[in-house]
Amino acid sequence: MGVTGRHDGGIGIQSVPALVPARVGKYRIDGIIGRGAIGLVYKGHDEQIDRPLAIKTLRPEVLEDFGEKNELLKRFAAEARSAGRCLHPNIVTVFDFVEHEGAPYIVMEFVDAGTLENVLKSGALLPMRQVGEIMAQLLFALGYAHSKGVIHRDVKPANILCPSAASIKVSDFGVAHVDSLNLTKPGGMGPVGTPNYMAPERFLGRPADARSDLFSAGVVLFQLLTHAKPFVATDLPDLMRKLMNEPAPAPSSLRPEIWPELDGVVARALARNPDDRFASAESFVDALNAAVDARPNDLAPPLDLSCLSMRSTRPTASAKEELNRTMADRLSPTALEKLSQSLARALGPIARLIVRQASREATDAETLVATLAQHIKTEPEAAFFKRMATETLLEDIGLAAARIEEAISETERRVIVDALLPLIGPVARVLVARQAETAVGRDDFYGRLAARIPNEIDRAHFLALRDKLRPAPHA
Image 1: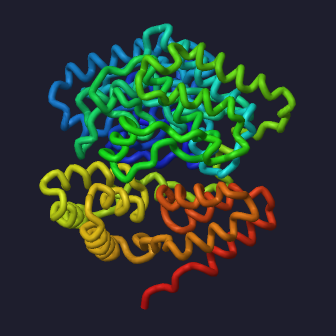
Image 2: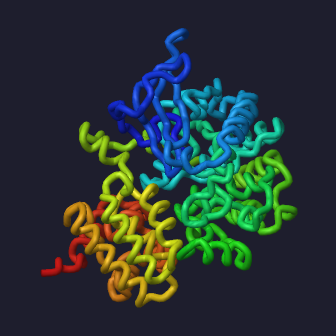
Image 3: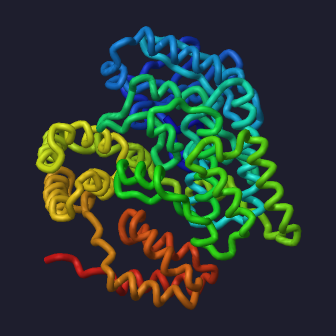
């Protein structure tokens, strides 16, 4: 579900709508602080001991879709009890489980903090010694949970909070497994988790174990070092193919300054066969420590995680509400049905389920269209769908909200590479190719590349190139 504290980096509590309970058991509900594809997170308060809380539950429509509610409640309670045993300074504490009007609620520690995902989005490259320290905390948390028989199943930057300058806390222990109780997300995504962070065996339907969590931690390590994911894919089948057949690239192939000792740690963490990975979180930490200790003279000062994880601008009240709304909230049922019909021309009846899932997760029109189009195999059909989808969105929510950014042309990429080569060296070619595949829109593309330029003046000149090369608007 992904929110335990202020993951959004400063977005406040939304007003409590009529359908939100005023209380859950003995706990007061103050408002919604997070939404996911299948979950809701409330800000709560224990009035008896004057303690703020995060209270997680499932979205009503998900509960309605689940047949055996008694089984769901039993498993929810069992997972909450398991997670409640994980009392560790790097783990968000689970306090209680409550059943209220047939719905399950997990009552957790409220952590007023941003996430490691926001740190990555800030564009800041952390010193490698600091990356090692962050990973050690993550692995200490995982190792402790594993010793209690608890597997996380959804380790990712969005589930790692940054409450202080140098510390992290892992959230959603006991929640990620609940999400997988036959709640496979619409669109046939299979075992629930975040695909880019899932171990290969999870895609094969095999049960998760400690080594699955350590693979996910390896993806987080790769991302902290490179600001990229190890396996870049166009859709879920492509991701599965790469996971099953291709080794992850060495982090130093993306950033030559990365220590080669860390390449070896990442390679073992991301091994396809679980038996070839680190056998435990402790052995993973030992390997990281050895890599860091091999560079005793690298004393780059650490960056403040709590500052990097919080957005610098605080939205107005109306913007706060808007930022938390998904496209499922913004679009009319008619528009969603039109999107389903357009996608069905290429995919058939499953299109409706895919649109349902994607609209619940996307918070902007561009991301929604890109997510849907990636399921279409042929470029002509994908291009046709994008045109139809854009027209639907323009009609439903207006030009300003639905505008789809132009693609980055090959000519523009060459100009960008030429501009970056004297600034960051040969790695420019690799970075431009990778960011062109993964960025969402022109501004995001240029912003990610600009973050790699160390000199502020050079960075400003590069961003000016973005405006110079921006395609003229269509008449």
